[in-house]
Image 1 (spheres, rainbow, N blue to C red):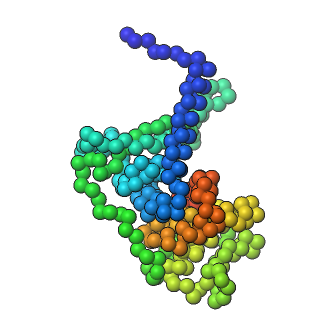
Image 2: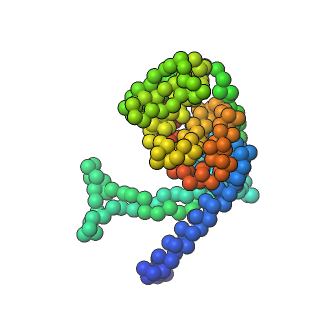
Image 3: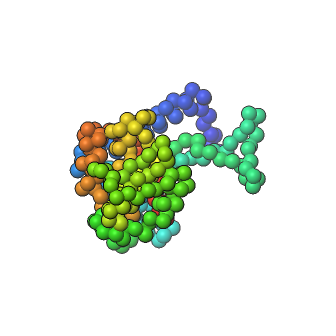
Length: 286
């Protein structure tokens, strides 16, 4: 019978440091693909929209290796669905959380109100997933086609977003004259101002942008105007992309202008942007 190898605390720490370095490099390699407006546009159209069920980091890692990925699962899930991987299927690395039981200062398990052991994320490990194009399953209809933002069909989301504003303690005011701006977020008076003469879709677009400011407290004092606008407009274009609407032509140059062409700002604030997108799409009922 084989004996289990025991590692010292120092060896475990070295192993952990090595794995963290490998994971950091995977992310660096993925972010290195976002070096231009063209790459960022492709990422919004294909990557973040098609892979929205994954975290921003994981979806970016998938997209950076397979730009046309649409439906992605692990090997076991594909097998469970009766789908076979091709012999040359491309393995795509992502980070999977590994949970451990919580313990108190005496080393005893901590239980929740239902009597189940509490668990928390202990670390992340690299696992591999595969796109449907690398299986024998029929590929789904291309979900990357997006509608133009012009029109009024997005107005159905208005009650949900107005309700979200109320949750945040903000009042939405629709005004005739908003100057050159289509709207803004007034943190002092807890108001979101929107030009009422916009099309229905443009009203929703403006609301999503200003709600991102309000929910994330993305203000100019803490972030600076440029960084704040990169964050909220990135969240806006991703949210609307997931809803199926294309605002890239207006948004990408806008983001690049505020970021002064430095796409690394996206890397700096990915966690913040991802949280905004998840919350906004959840409030929209997606």
